Length: 334
Ligand SMILES: *[C@@H]1O[C@H](CO)[C@@H](O)[C@H](O)[C@H]1NC(C)=O
Image (tube, rainbow, N blue to C red; front, side, top):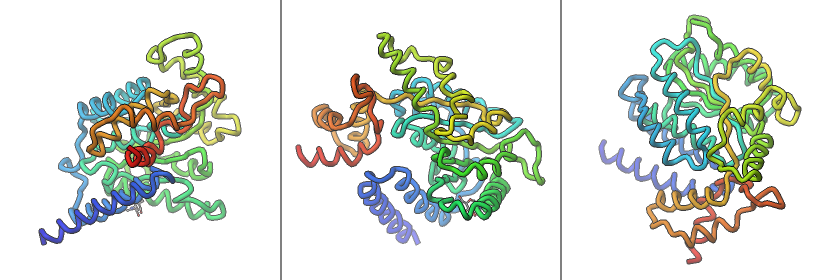
């Protein structure tokens, strides 16, 4: 029996590495998804259960992870630390925790959800209590919307019934059908019980690009004024995450009803990343691969990234996305 597990595990490690390397250029989300499905199978064999052996909040762990691993996001880091710790330490929360993460791609929104999951669930993103939905993967056909709605409601209800401390991540909210958002609204409310189920221990995280232009503008204004990026405060970014921004049709109407009803507890802005952050991502990625971080290699790689706005060229268009694949090209070349 033990040998079987071992083979299973080795196979898993091999497969997940191959996947990660092969698919990086397409979508990290996709790879994380694949690896997670595989881990879920593995966990099923290992009997992960909704108990403190598998679910225990590590407040220090989260603080250290946000501090050391999340690059260039001092505002998001602080708000998330406060929000998650406050909620997890509350024995009697009045509603589920609802976070809405905003910013350009590659700025760490997905990564942060991973850090949160890792410090609540022993199995992290692979936990069977963590659910990741991506509109184009899970709800691709607009004509099927009615089916998706009832399916999603069943999933949320079924999973929270199984384990009150469940986490639901909705990726690419801006591409999601507004009807789907409406159908999960009841679960985000202040009800003590809804159909005999309490959702108050659950965590909902929404990821989107909405508001990114306005967030970038704030960062750019600071830069032009010669001010330190670290001086940017949450209140400087709040107008960028206001109702008027969400109500313009490019960023989607989806948010307005959530905002009007105050169902989102925290709107969390992710700043666009600069050259020096891409360097840091590269260095971190090298050590994560077990390599000696090499400034020259990382520098060469970072110079291939495209920066905007056209004149100033300050922010990386893709943030730190695709670093993994690009790094490989360069390591091969040295
Ligand atoms: C829990 O959610 C998953 C999707 O992440 C779904 O496949 C599964 O059927 C749900 N479980 C229940 C009991 O509804």
